[in-house]
Length: 474
Image (cartoon, rainbow, N blue to C red; front, side):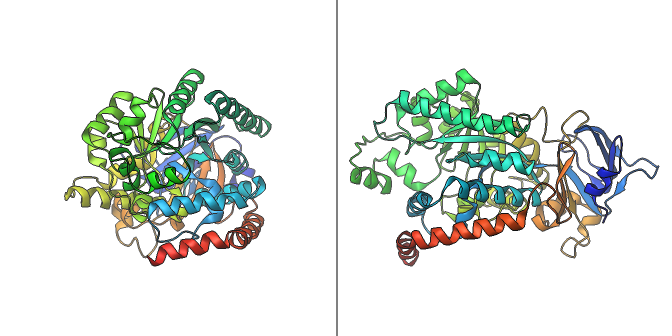
């Protein structure tokens, strides 16, 4: 198949791509369609024009770049280390292993994760990070995204003012990285008050005020697990035990985590609520009234035994919802086609209704729905003239597609496609993955660096990993 990278070297003016299918998402699909772009913006979306100036991609689908609204790129190096564990020991193990890695380790780990995203057709990422390494990863890879700097603080010290001062310095440093790499137009900054069980109420409210005053989108892990639900509803469970061991006083709240977030002022800024597995009708009303959006992570929720999120109810209330892969530690891969399938199957299983989510609706969640959840729908998420030339091309000529790829692209993409079917990923008109090549990254070097960091984690974290294996046997 022709190579876009080589074509760009020899082309002046608009670049044209044609394929059997073009799926704008915001409008009807085109059989034998074409897209064109120039200076990073889309200039044509429609039926293939008769002249021979377009790069013919054959039996394939051109669709908007996929939007992954919740990930943790930094954790790529930890993939596969904490398997088959309940949520609470899993998150404790993850927290403990983080201490063995340096900032350089986090940067190479996040950048390798960004390469995997590009190869999967993902062009935009909502990434929650602890070390700030994802900024460098997105800048160097050419991907687009919003990087949310995580904030923790369940104990009464340090004071809120000190935590905010540190956050301001971290954001300024991240902003400087973007300026030096000329990536400010692609990569936005946000904040992430981590979760109700890691951020006390006073700090929750202060962070929301800070986000609102400075125009930051914030993202919060909310109502994810039964352990979180037990802490807030009955004041018990493993989180309560951990607090007691650390000398943290915890009064029973007798409310849901989402109600607690609302009560503490955490929803008083633009908020992307992540997971919302254990969201009641009242919780969904709180989220809707607050104008929150939702990151739905069905594979991670399933793997960690968290449950099935009430996707139909969230959609019925009009919340903007996107899909997220979560981290490599909980989702293992960033195959967004698997994520779409998991969303469809989970919604239908929960509702016992095949109409709970269709293939077309799943594609919307993976593209324009995600762009809306990140408040970036004006520039991306659909193929429309004037929008950013962010797109991916998915081959539909594999044996696992035959014969559906010929006549039903939406079904082929959602029910049989794989990340390995992606042959081209473009951001702002520039290829970031092109038929097995990564024009912006040295993936071989990244893999070697991450392998070295992985050995260090396994060696220095031997005791922690041993305890994790004990949990697996229980």
